[in-house]
Length: 451
Image: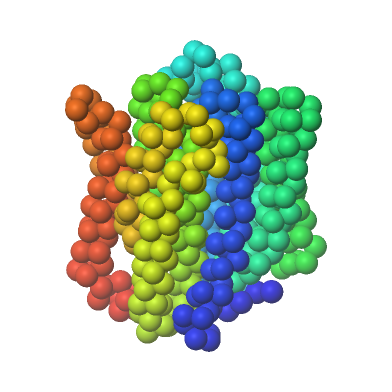
């Protein structure tokens, strides 16, 4: 089921490769949406706020090894495009050992530091116990998330975006069934929602690992590569750690904003929790399209197909723009009905705050769509450091403006909402100007260096 992205019509190839990734991650969002929907409807706004804040924290924590997997995936794609199978196998083994070690250390630390973390987030006393109980269960799923994302990144790097989708689809259905069973049937509260998510994560993580082990024997961890060469480790570090830094900075900024949101009380926390789920679900397809575009560019970079990359850029920008305009209109005009999926109609304050958030964010999805394409492009052409720069600009602007504007009494929480599209716009501007200035280097010089 591998697909060589260096051949075939560019637009069609890119679209067909990206569709399973888009559908797969939309299904992955069902993990959190199932929790939010069931918790919000049946356990109340306090539980909704606890689970929503936990989601932001978990996104930050898992971004460390998710970034490592994404960066390693770029290396795998380049090797596959070059046709260097021996080097690809060595990179797979080295990357697995590296990311597994980081994941194990992270998992130990979060259990050890759970209370200081909750204190840093300024979690209100009335939901502290619920949030701590939810996180204590959720943390057990971190190894499963690592397994799924490592093997999904590997399979996608060689053009197989279908198998990760299959495992996520089965997992999403199981998550919803278990959520209903544990929360409503057994009355386990937020811990039941967490248990459902963790069990589903292990189904997808262990399942995709076993599939790859049994059917893709040339992608197994190889004993002869357990002591990888320095050059291989250096290349993985260049891609993986910078991509991990990018993901961590991105989610650290979001986590800092979450702490600010929490300071406005349970109503704003609940509104933010529900609105962010819709927001993430809305722009998730263009994020995955950006990741698919990155794999496309990386394979063609490895194969030294400059003109195909140029055509891919033109086609990707056009497709992303059309999607973002359509989804912006949908979220802007249907903000309230979308929020009613998670929030009871009588909770008018939560609904009002959530609608404000979605209408501000929803009007500017073209900004985040362009940014995801820039991230993917720079990662694929061996300039992951530029992705970090753009992330720092985007999130740094968001955090600074959120704290400054929200401190103005006449602006308040609206300052937090408006800081997001402003950050997107500044990062897009820098990324585009850099591309125009360095276009010759990005294509001709890099290809010459590879030769």
